Image (cartoon, rainbow, N blue to C red):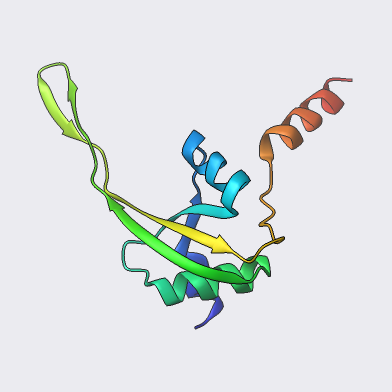
Length: 110
């Protein structure tokens, strides 16, 4: 698998209460992934990009909700999520842009 495909597979982390509880208690990281991604591709992508050993990958296709915008009906996009179980003691380091953005804005204000 080439590097371009690796970056196309993982679309981003999922930040939710459920994802945080799974990460804290069971060592499971949650990612939004490409709809065409397979479990093997997801495993390789996480191992190569983050250097963590993956034990298991579970995927789920989440159907988008139907929403109303006044008189018109709309629909959110469908999303594929991957629950990646890491080996005990390992973690995936995500860049926390909120803290760095706050640090940059405070230093530029001075």
